[in-house]
Image (cartoon, rainbow, N blue to C red):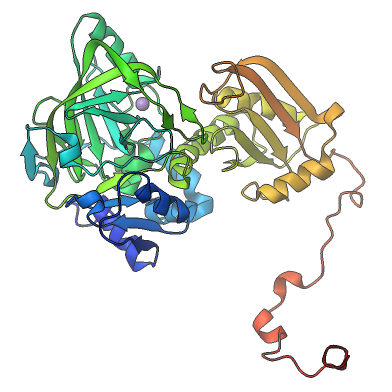
Length: 462
Ligand code: MN
């Protein structure tokens, strides 16, 4: 069935990275406590890293598999400029999953659950409370409609068969709350090690009851193969490496955290939900995936699906919007750059207000003209430096909803700022004429430069 998929699994994608020269391999036996994360972090955005037998485990670990925007575009099979449109198209045209009964991820099934013995779970940041499963896709199900949801939640290994989990008030939380109120446990599955398109689709800003796995299917161009869990009705990707089957325990809260999060600060230790693991299923020779908190893999998985949603949201009202980018310095969520072909006075300010409403994480919006590359933060800064006047072009909205992980606001309550860095319409064209050197772009450096410096008196004589 999956013979025609380019990358049906994590392992097929890692093989591709290896063939392209984008996979480093660590020495065997790297310690799971900080040492693995330290090596992965040093190579962040340069190469993905494979760790054979980390901490003496048989199972290898891989990290950084989608640590570059161009790798994600490659996995999707488009150019970087086509990435957001392709993702939006998949979000708008999901493909129902294809259920199979024979799945690679069911090659090994155990109900004798001891997570630290079974899995090489690393400890990443200095103040993390301990080992965390950071690349687990949490599958939950609407008990009324049967629709599934996918989200990546941080999972603290709290005991041999016990995970502490942060479940923010989004879709899984919405499904869980009424079930827990009846005093019933809530079935979940945690999927570790999936293909890059499923990983990306899991972060789609999709409506309630839209199964993100169906968006993954659309990105693949054919339905995603799923299999029923061995202990619940949940359906999980058949070609995943590892699945933990379990239940969120009704009425139980235990300490979870701290954990180094995407803004490169720690999420606090407080009482959170607890997941009891009942069974673990795996492929033969499974591959464990870990994501560094705040690393490029983490930031890009957050930013690209958000960019696609924000771009579609703005285009519904503003035909002048050409492109958007959530900068990496803005942790892939807080700083939005918008490129427009400005036609109306004041348009940039309307777009800023529209962008604030596109996602509550958006904190600072900068609007630039179509001669500025929004993927180049230095160019955006140049536009701000030369086209923006704070008394005329700045919007500040106090007391708005923001990200709870931004330490500078009051638990998610704070300010928004918009900066219109576009040229005034009708300005003297020469005033804003960007300097250029004729022929610069056409220079063939191989032809223009001498292989060896000739004798030059000014350099060769004192
Ligand atoms: Mn969802």
